[in-house]
Length: 329
Length: 250
Ligand SMILES: Cc1cc2nc3c(=O)[nH]c(=O)nc-3n(C[C@H](O)[C@H](O)[C@H](O)COP(=O)(O)OP(=O)(O)OC[C@H]3O[C@@H](n4cnc5c(N)ncnc54)[C@H](O)[C@@H]3O)c2cc1C
Ligand SMILES: Nc1ncnc2c1ncn2[C@@H]1O[C@H](COP(=O)(O)O)[C@@H](O)[C@H]1O
Image (cartoon, rainbow over all chains, first blue to last red; front, side):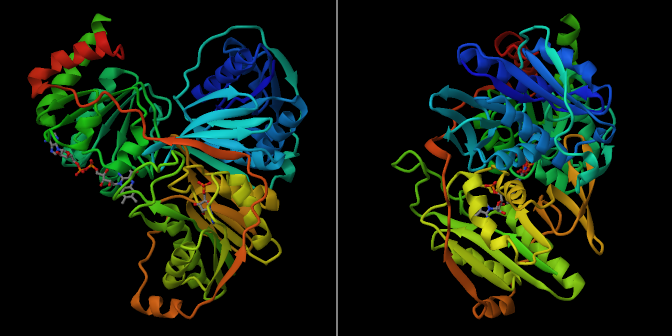
C-alpha cells in the first residue's frame, strides 16, 4: 500500500485536462499498490481552491492548495520548491506530473531538488517493485524504451493524452499551504502570457487533430482543414514543418520531432507525406486517417484508414459527411 | 561574456535504425553520429551573443565516449573557442546522473550563460538542462524561442500550448534553447582549419549513481495500418462509417 502524488496544472483560473490525467493516474497507481491515498497539489492566485473539488472527482483524496497573489502565472522556482517540499513530506511511492510545456519545465527541477530519478514523457507504466517500469518513446519515436526507475518517490511525467482520465469521485480534503519559496524571492518571473489564436482548442488537449501538409499548395487552402476541424467540433488544427517553414501556419502549429508531440483519439493527415520527423510527433494517436494522392506515401502505411486521391475533392466531401454524422448523433 | 554550451553526440537515425542484439540499445552497425538538433541552435545563440558583444569566450562541453570529440571538433569549427570532453564509456539514459557530472565543470567558472538544447533527439527527455540548473542553484528558463539580453538581465519567450510566455531572468542563468531561434551556421573552411588548433580538454566523467536505465528497447508496436478505404470522394461515406462504427471516434 502506497500513497501517490499528482501535480494539477491550472491556467487562467481553470484546471487543464492534463491535471485530471495526472490525478487519475495517481489514483490508479495508489489503488494498484493496494489502496493508498492520492494527493494533489494545486498552485495559483487566491480563489484557485474552488477547483479542488474537481480533482476529487478524478480520485484525489487530498488537495493541497497554495494560493498567492503573485501566482497568477507559473513561477518555475516557487512551483518547483513547493512540489519538492510536498513530495519530501509525503513519503510517496510515486509522483505524477504532465509532460506539458509547464510540466516539462517543472518535473526535472523537482526531481533534481529531491535527488530522485524522473521518467519523462511516458505513455504507460507499471509498478514492478522495487522499480517503476515506464514506457517512453525514444529516438524521435522510432523506438519505445522500457525504463527502469529505482527509488522513491519515483517521478514520472505523462505525455498529454496518453493516459486517459477516469472519474473516481470522492470528497477531497482541502488543505491550504504556503508556498515553499516566497514568490518575492523568485529570480525568474513570468511577466506576460499572451494567447495565440483566441479560443482555439490546443493541440495537446483536442481529442481530434486535423493536420495539413504541403499538399494543400497554399496558405489560402488551409480553410479546407479548418472547416473539417470545425465539423468535428472538438478538433484542433496542426501542420507539418514544410507548412510552418513557408509561413502558411504559425510555427506553434507544427507537429513532429521539433514541434509538438501529440496523442489524440483521431489524427487526420491531409496532404502530408509522413516524413519520419512528422510521424515522431503523432504516431501514438489512437486512430490515424490519411488523405493523399500518393498511395505509396509513408503516412498511408501508418494510417488505420486511408483514402487515395485529390484532397481538394475529398476534404469538402468529408467535411459534409462528418457534419451530417454528428447531426445524426 | 563567458558562455558554456552543453552538447550531446547522438546517433543519426535517419538513414538506418535497428534494435541491437542486447535489446537495450540500437544496433551500432553503420551508424553515423552527429550533434543533437537543438544543441546546434544553442551553439548558434552562443556565437551570436559573442559576436554582438564583440568578445568573450564560448566553451563547449560534452559527456560521452571517444567519438564525442568529433562533435566537439564540429562545434569548434563553427566558432566555439575551446572544448571539454568528459569521457564515459556510454551516455546513461539517466538525466540526473549526466547533470551531476556536468556540474563540477560549470560551477565557479564565471559562466554568465549556460546553454542546453531543449531536448536530446535520442532520449527526448528535456531534463538535463533544468536539472543542472537546479543542482547549480541557478535561475533557469527552458525552451527559449526568443532571447534578448541587457546588462545583467534577460528577457526570454517560450511557446507553450496555445500561449506565448514572456519571462524575465537575471544573469548568470541556464537556458535551454528551442528550435527556430537562430538557424545554426555551417562550419566554414576557415573554421575547420582553425578548429584543428583549438584545445579539447579530456577528463573522466564522474557519473555517480544511476537510477534510471533502459531495460528494453523495441520498435513501436506495428500499427495495423495501411488500410486503403478507397479512392476519391466516393470513399468518404465508407470512411465515416468506419470512424463511427469500427473506430468509434465520431
Ligand atoms: C532536423 C529536422 C527536423 C524536422 N522536424 C519536423 C517536424 O517537427 N515536423 C514536420 O512535420 N516535419 C519536420 N521536418 C521536415 C520533414 O522531414 C518533412 O520535410 C516534412 O514533414 C514534409 O511536410 P509535408 O508532408 O507537408 O510535405 P511533403 O513531404 O512535400 O508532402 C506533401 C504530400 O502531399 C501530397 N499531395 C500533394 N498534392 C495533393 C493533393 N492534391 N491531394 C492529396 N495529396 C496531395 C503528396 O503526395 C505528398 O505526400 C524536419 C526535418 C529535419 C531535417
Ligand atoms: N552527454 C551529454 N553531454 C553534454 N550535454 C548533454 C549530454 N546529454 C544531454 N546534454 C544536454 O542536455 C540537453 C537535453 O538532453 P535530454 O535531457 O537528454 O533531452 C541536450 O540538448 C544537451 O544540451
